[in-house]
Image (cartoon, rainbow over all chains, first blue to last red; front, side, top):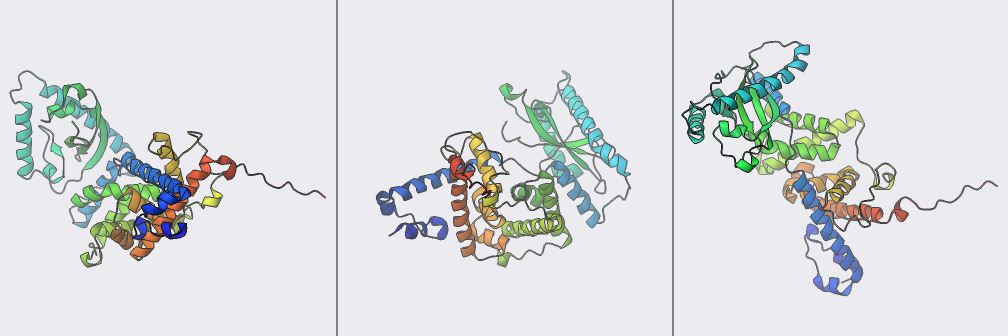
Length: 203
Length: 180
């Protein structure tokens, strides 16, 4: 087998690497080694990009489009100027509401344990709360329910990981101060209704 | 929206690698799902997996965008040496491509591939789409996917080897202009 035949039998071409040729040809062995490093580099690149995804506003726009297609659009025109301001106002409101939720959850008179609160919320989801229709979202305590026809906005914010505790999720103490990304669902009244932590699986 | 949550990240990354622009990637991702929504999802399981179908829509939208904007970022390997910043990270960029700087070098090399080769690298090597799905997405036979991937890896090796020996890539002595 010559070098050309060797490279024409690479796995991506449906062949197999001929180890015998590699032992005999130093040039092909060196190139093969570089190809292995390239493959490792591509895997590392894929891993470093693994968490990249479309921003939350894409999901918001699609939800609005979906509601429009389903004839569920409430049809409230929004002036273009407000379109620019609303997401920022909503983000600020979301952070404030989350902070309030966290503070309330830490009040000593609160009798429910974090796990019990989590159970309560899971029950809300299963009973068909509009917020529960959104995959991965946890309804905020005391937040109003969304009607099916209401439009929502999603805003991505960073909150301390300890905010998860208030929503019934377990957080290891050493990581409680870390910041974590979350999507906050904002109702048409500008109030936060539900939250989805983006890396809740890595508590 | 469950479909969106499962598929959006891979489609977004595909569009990002192909366009080099986060804004374009965002638009393409959105447009893929709007297309599915509007056209009632003309997906036919007999012609391939859903993954290949969605990547195919994303690719067509990317091509349309490139035609519209005339700003396809695909750069020919021979023409890109002056355009991409040189990073003197290591004497040999292939020594450790898994380091952060190495990954950035590699990212630029992938971006510099001609589009037809970049597509297969992004799909098969970065998104780990199998050859059959990639063939559906690209609208070509599996054999073409295989040969393009083989060629693309060769081009990447050449590109990175050029960076390893900058004298061969950018500092080649050019003949002086004859004044007589």
